[in-house]
Image (cartoon, rainbow over all chains, first blue to last red; front, side, top):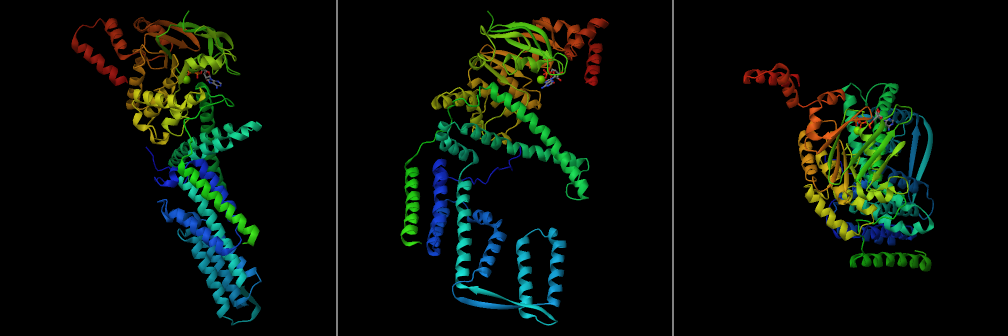
Length: 325
Length: 268
Ligand SMILES: Nc1ncnc2c1ncn2[C@@H]1O[C@H](COP(=O)(O)OP(=O)(O)OP(=O)(O)O)[C@@H](O)[C@H]1O
Ligand SMILES: [Mg+2]
């Protein structure tokens, strides 16, 4: 059968982090994120990041996987960085660049962007990177080349605080991504859900139906891979009848997507109907009391992690309040 | 008192003719009953009424002396289990172990007991090595065996199989029927199928046609009622066709019988 489909980002391993109780991991990540947002000082942040990197190194999860999780954000990170650097105007002036926007340069800029929009769909790899190189090249052009009539001259000034602030923000986002990846790489979705089930239990006293919510999540986790397989089947069936989802006019493509959605909807509906019968026949009562096959029991390492994590939170709060770090 | 009593049950889906009309029969403890019927004859409707998923429009179902209704269903359900046709749509858990546990969790069974039953019943259907597997990585036959283990683990007395093998490949059919045959003498089984061959390992046959019970006989007697079986649009067995032809033509020689056999295979 098909075992390509691995839902979620779970990475199989037997590290200590994988063995940690999911409740501990959820609460720890949450608490560490709070710590992260309390930290104001960039050196403290670097220290915090170093700790996170130490944890990553100790888990046997390849570092590339973490880099991949940032990769999707590279563009956002870069834009944030550049905007911070350009628009922060405090601290000492480090360097000032003078750019000349001439008619010639303007034409070159417009033409290159236009070409980019035409050809970008054919670029498979490093798309963002290629785009950034082009943008950089356009600025270099304006920095060095100033022939033909000038439209406007403008400066980009880089200040020390701008640079620090930009690094601070980018590092913080990266650390945040690392933290959440640590959780999702080391915990199966269903374990996360069980952890949540336990953690949310107190809410049931307030008549919040948390068990129904976690049951819905676990059913969703169960059926997403099946529905993906099903979608592939329908796609193949329709491709074999000549449907093409990539080419053609917009209207034709919309029709084809509709022809995919309709059968998928019918299949999912039928499934839900059958599943409700199967669950009911096996004695499921939506708000009823149930026992659980998953037994969550704190072990030494779990308590130890709690202590460390709360210690970190306490220290960051203390430093912030006392020294405004 | 019989274990299962179906009394004058009728059912109608909205805007349709009756899916079941005045069906009655009793099933004794330990019996292995086959419900036969063509597509749309009302078999699944009957199954759902017996396990309390649908409520009969008229008539009643009595399980072990208790009439099924909203108030009794939760407790009577402990005695009932059903395995449906589609292997995917009844797999509730994310893994085999979770799926077998699902019914036990609903019954508030303690964890240690759950683990014991999971181990015991998964090995009964030869799925003990797959406990941590996800349904995407199992064959249809394996999924159906998990469904059987899930129902057995709840330790009810009555188990309904609603065309549990009809979506499987021949290998899967064999695996699943083998698991079902093991239940003979242990459980009371209602085995629903449209396939006459599968009636052979049951004690008794009930035939439905257009929602009406047209036959209710011990299995060997049932096969003699060829006209009724045919009128219920059921494909009678090759061996029965052969006997029919032999009687009809008064054949005696081996060669002629062989020829007929060839014809029959060819028709198929
Ligand atoms: N949910 C429903 N809504 C409306 N009509 C239904 C529904 N389910 C079944 N029917 C109709 O009721 C009749 C009996 O259906 P049922 O599913 O009980 O037959 P079946 O013997 O199980 O058939 P099959 O061999 O196809 O499973 C059919 O005419 C069917 O179209
Ligand atoms: Mg049916």
